[in-house]
Length: 197
Ligand code: SF4
Image (cartoon, rainbow, N blue to C red; front, side, top):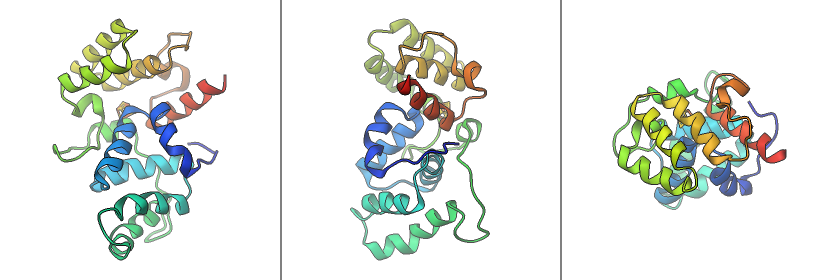
């Protein structure tokens, strides 16, 4: 995972530019709802840890949102422990790693939750709308992603989505062939490298 650090203030633009769509969705949902349910907090919290958000900043980040709906004491009691736990500071002090795509794809979810892989959980019409918005100049790739998604090739769809969002990538190769197996954090790391070139 990333060895560099991420500043709290940079999460807004980073989430829009370089987060994989599953994490971008969780970020937006958290900002809108001021809450995420258990698996959303786990999926997103461990991803943020993996990109280099410190425990201190993570506590501030979640607290800022959750305390728009609850008081600080409730947050500290019910949620602070789990955040510290994810960073290996509570319980068995295990250093938990970010979830892989296959783990995320296989999480079950309800309509009131926002975790999971968007290529599996988001309805075809909504996915088409989102892709058509971000990929107006690449209609063929949009159709390819929708087809891959319908055929349950979720990770290949996501590789194509990365190429859609990083259009100057000249190799045209899916990112798995550039970096090994796709992972939400490798999606992010590749995006960071892309913008350094
Ligand atoms: Fe996230 Fe992986 Fe699904 Fe892409 S394939 S949206 S990185 S879970």
